[in-house]
Image 1 (cartoon, rainbow, N blue to C red):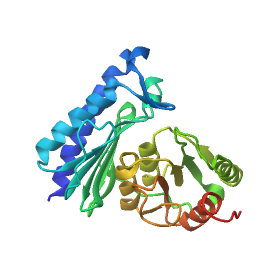
Image 2: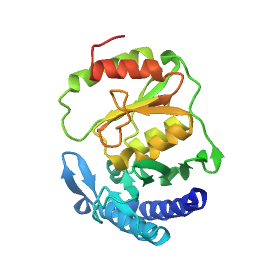
Image 3: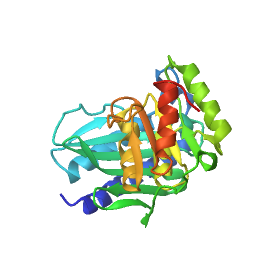
Image 4: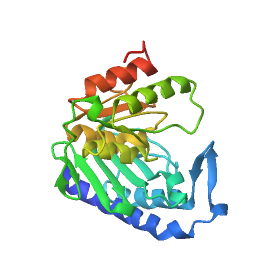
Length: 268
C-alpha cells in the first residue's frame, strides 16, 4: 500500500469537502440545524460531506470499512478502516467561527497509519502517514521545543454532556492558567491536535472525544515528534474518550499534572 500516493487522494477528498463547507456557510438557516444531543449540533453539511467523502474513499480504496460520525455508512471492522469526521467543530461552523475542519484517518489492523486534517477557512492542510512525517501545506512540521510549563500555551475542550468530574477539570484549568502562557479553546479537537503537531500549541488534553475527533490529529502529533496517551498513560485514547498530546520535552510534567487532577492525587 503506497501511503504517499494514497495520502494525496485523501487530501483531495478533504479539500472538496472543505470547499463545500465554505460554499454553504453563509446559507445555513436555523431550521436546518438539528440537535443530536445537548449542545451537539449537526447540519446537512455534515451529512452531505460524509457521503461525499465515503463515496470518494470507496473509489480509491475498495473494500475498506468506515467508522464515521454521522453514520451514513454502517461500521464494519475490516483490515482497513477509514475514520471520518466530515465537519469537526459544527457549532463553530453554524456561528461563522472559522475553526472547523475535516478529519480523515486510515487504520490498518487497529493502527492509524494515515491522517489528514483540513481547515478550509484558513486553507491549511495538515497531513502525514507512517514513514513519511507530518506536513502543513507540503512543508514539514514538528512539535514545539518548549520544555517549561511556564512557557507553554495549552489547549483543551469540553464535552457536550455534563462532566461528572467538572470540579477536577476546573481545578486543573486553574493550574494551567496560573502556571503557563494560558489556555485556548478552538472548539475543534482535530484542529487542536494539528496545532500541537506544528508547535502552535505545546500541549492538549480533553475528555469525551470520539475516534473520529482524534484519529488523524493524534497521528500527526506522533509523526511530528510528540507524545500521545490517555489519562492513565496508555495507548487507548482512540476509544477511551480521554487524550493527552504534547511535545516530548514537556510531556512528563504535562502528563503528571493532568493525570493527577483527573485520575489520581493532585500535585502542583
